[in-house]
Length: 522
Ligand code: FAD
Ligand code: SIN
Image 1 (tube, helix red, strand yellow):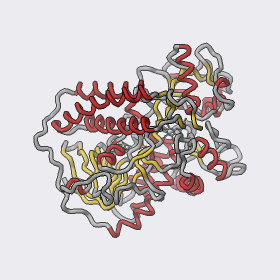
Image 2: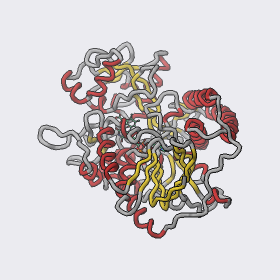
Image 3: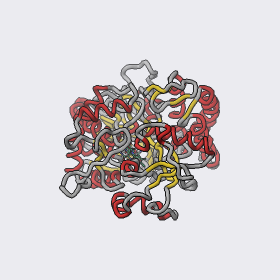
Image 4: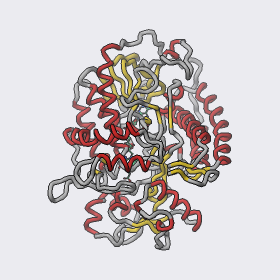
């Protein structure tokens, strides 16, 4: 099937939906999303969204905290843009129906998380992301110009390469004409031709054994841009959340929000001994890279499989009122958080780098924008400040929408694009080849490219990855495409970029900590 739209959007989290609602004023919009529309990291965000709302907070303080977290690699211009536009974008989310909690005096109830010097995190109990996703999706579903194609998997973006023009990294007019998309109704690859395309495909967590990310987070958009010879950046900076619920049979790992530490939860060993004083004066509320490394180190010292978060001293009613989802989840596995400590471990949570974009959300490929977690704006530098990612997504989707709307009239659909050619491929009847390789990939990334790295570990990771890469490319070329083989191929591509960029970084900085460079640049 061939389809023509003005705007094609890959992904239906906060980045894709907020962009869609804006560009739909100007033209037809098609959102392809690989699962149910709400299935996204956005939907699972707990803590909230950082923004400057009231004094004594100020844009300057939020800028300062963001730059400190970023360990010298933030782009100050981008940080200032994001933060000075935060209040307006929050008001817009509210106007679309997002309900943030208020306190008794009617003001927004702002929380504090690691690395923030002020209370500035807007939230909706401990299910902020679901509240935002619901509001945006409700608006998108009722918009007459927006079509949402669920369970449709974008395989590759289309460029001139697909009609026989050679493209390499130095080609400066690589242009995007849409995407090839796997249609679940026909099992065929559709050709979706667009004037403007936005990649909003989220994160990469599933290439690690432990992750807070939903199953859909497999780095697809980043891999597509890499294959199309677009620019990517800062992928070595993988953020591990310090406190995912330790529940070994569960994937993804359930997040225990940092806001719970902001509320007074204290990290302790299994024996009930506090340890953060050994690592940072800010104790349990130190930035999350410091906390994650501290937990990693405590687990290595003790040999324990997890540490604990102690909330037993907190007011029981307030605890349940503010964290109903966490209370219910823990209770469902037999832990009453008002009486018992919560077992927690670090888990892959967020990728700071991604598709390189400018201040208008433009990638290095013409007519292709990227926003949200798959993009690298320069906001986070070497480490992301908690709750800055939902904010970054709405700010840059807004900016990308403004730019796209001004551009769309001057772009024509490309008619000479051929349909997908699946000649010579057969159904792969050995799913074990994919599941086993995925497992191996996760082990390589977790053991060698995790919280603590070294030159030797990275070399070993690259050597092992090379084998998985060759085997998977071979299988991909021969197989009728399925979502699972495409996801595996994408994760291998992104793993390559992470390991390559980590190897090139001859220092420890922010989230990239290497035993060979013990002096961490903060
Ligand atoms: P997502 O919301 O992940 O959406 C990506 C979309 O792309 C999905 O719809 C997916 O199905 C689709 N997709 C992916 N690949 C394809 C493909 N090939 N074809 C078609 N569709 C595709 N950040 C904060 O700021 N505050 C928080 O409190 C917070 N809490 C978090 C808690 C958890 C458990 C997690 C996992 C993350 C949290 N984050 C938080 C991070 C934040 O939620 C994400 O960075 C943000 O939601 C990303 O939004 P997005 O729109 O870029 O991607
Ligand atoms: C959390 O609620 O701890 C996650 C916040 C974030 O990832 O920004």
